[in-house]
Length: 355
Image 1 (cartoon, helix red, strand yellow):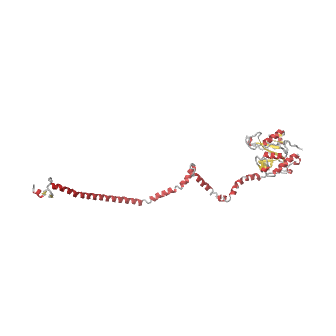
Image 2 (image 1 turned 90 degrees about the vertical axis):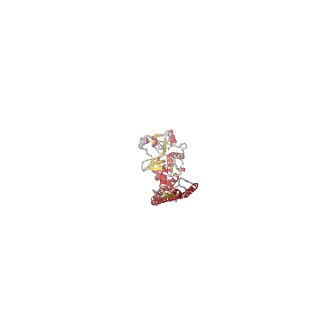
Image 3 (image 1 turned 180 degrees about the vertical axis):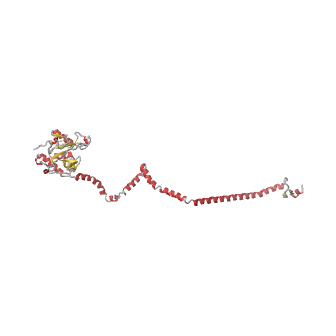
């Protein structure tokens, strides 16, 4: 062994540095030196741990800084975007406001699709409520429901009033030409008929009794003749026509002229017959009847008495038991005679005795 090995010191000529060993030189390890190696490792391990802890703490600090930066940026973004946030809230509020128009649109869709029956019903009720408030007269209707209902019936009587605005007409025997020369039985019948025209009786379909407030055309003839002794008079106009035809004293009229020769045999007290005054399927097709009065002194026109729902006297329509002008109806406007009145003819009352 050299001195360097004995002292544990070696000289390095090239580097001029000294290295020391605490035991035998490298390559030679005694048992004690083998025991001392773990002590070095034990000293290096805490250092390494410290370095690791320092590195981890450094990384943690860096991550914290980065986190702080990210939090800062996020905060900046949060504070930098307050304006879009309210805008979003505004949009949401607008969306909240849109449901208010959406129900308005929804009723339209509900109007279009009535399938959601529960929804339209309340909305229809709301509409009815809107209809009720729109006519501000609803409070007026509530205090005055009767007058509001009265206009509707008042409208029905208004046409009735228009119908009776031209009131029923009556004539005295003095206003009829040659009335005094009529046979007594004829005057008896006509006097009774003129008395009925003074009672303001209306036209009541199916009635043959003035106690009902009105009569129809054949009901008037039926009541008048039965009250004057003709017990076999039929009830409806078609059978009254047959009744006269069977008696053999009937004059058919084909002309539509007022001065036709077919009317030369017409006498006061004769029964007059029409067809086509209303549409009905019957045989014979007679639908209207009256009784002939004669000529009025003032106008020289033929007049008759009976019950009608719109015939005229003096150019005005009358409804009910009245005196009417006897004139030939105009030609029908169509080829269907069932819907146009046609005068068929006239005849004497069966069993009437002229004195």
